[in-house]
Length: 198
Image (tube, rainbow, N blue to C red; front, side, top):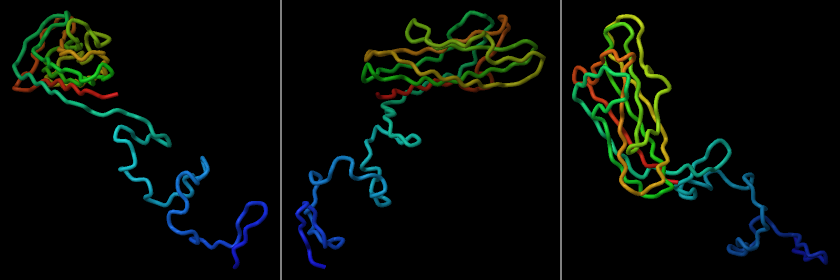
């Protein structure tokens, strides 16, 4: 078929692939002229996606990234019998790299419960400020006498807005001041701090 340049400005007679390589560049394409239907499978791979982004459902969103992780463990048995939040030896320091970073704090507390109406709760302090506390003083609780060892995981996403060194501390209290032995039988409590970049 002959190539015809029409008076209307259109060209007819071109076969598929008839233009030499490099003839059509990004500046030639009209805005919004290419959609997903024109893309072949595999055209967009991980190397073409920003490292700090993720695909959620049908949207590409910036989800941040983990910048550092700090882990602290405490394994000494500690006897506690108070409904006042008290240190039990579990703390960790972290220095955020940016004021926009968030700190994901995850911790576990472990104790034996072997009498009726025993339980405990935990809270998180950033320096001298309380940033998370269980709603009651018995997140973990038993009502009747039973010999059981329980571990309670808790997490909190904190926004310290600081680049100075921060100390996070876990405190616990016991239900009705009944005696609890934390870290009994060589168990461990653990605090994990993860800096999440903006």
